[in-house]
Image (cartoon, rainbow, N blue to C red):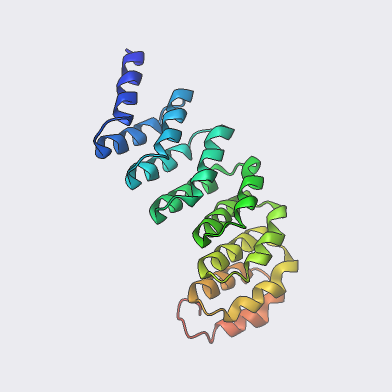
Length: 205
């Protein structure tokens, strides 16, 4: 009976209808077997954005290096929705073993890939992510600077307070908000926080 169910689910994961494939990805997320992991990894290469996004979310619940590295590779998916799902899945995994693969993505030509890698590194709290994140604070893309601020905020290293404080006047309100959140627990950041009270954006204040 169980084997028959597995076969039926595998067939749905390869169905011609993308809606059926998407639902199959959701079901596969609940299956711990290696066959389910393999089908979810294959789902990351699906032609449909929604299927790939569900496959990414499903792999967030599956252990193993193969699943983790497949997610890292999917950070350069052409769909923003899929990249967001991939980054969230990687962050949820909290697997330090993927740190090196994520760090390598910080030099990617696509800003969304760089931002996704940084987002995934936040919950890992890797000390080796500190220096690359500081470098990323000067990235031309605001989404990359935002995620770099978040990484440094998670690390809570007082040595990063001065460089974070310099971004309190970043052109992006989203970056400035992240800076205030990252600095709020550091006594050395009081001047920057006081400056935030006068920010033009009410959410920064």
